[in-house]
Length: 243
Image (cartoon, rainbow, N blue to C red):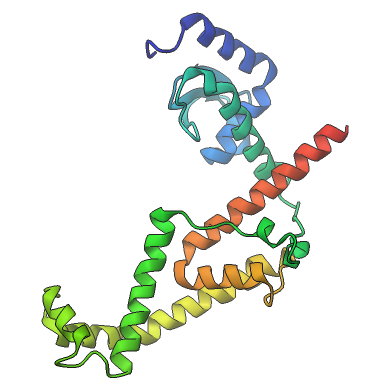
């Protein structure tokens, strides 16, 4: 145990979690580690540090390590992080059929509630790479990437393997597959996410998510799912307060 964690406080936290939050321990295992429900039964906290908790569960008392999300910057952060992780797991596992209605987010007043901007890493890096490829396509097919052009000289200066000729050949080779893949990703975003949650295509959130799905692919789907999970959590918290 790190010296920054007082032993007495650690033991009190472990005892408290095992006495009052055993069900949360099982939820941690099921949601964050993918442990089947029978094997997550009878969960018991063994230890906790700044990066992970060790939980024993199941008929055989199997030991599992659950990474804290986020890691603790100090021991005093443990309560807030454990509560937040419990809500995330509960929203995902105990309310799988709860589908937040985001249709109202199409209005100008609340459109931002259905939008989640990408992070620099990896989201924007992925989108930037895709954007660079499509810009290259535009230059190639418009004839602006030709011998003597600024774009041609830039490829020469970049020391691209095989030179500008190979660069042009490669751009043309993968153009149709790349475009088809990204169009399909945008279509899947609509069919599996936007339509399910009542977001109209011709709305700010609809165009936002279709655009990012086209350029980002999987990263946009993950970000959308995190947003929905947060909406579920908010609904569950309101219901808990009303009882």
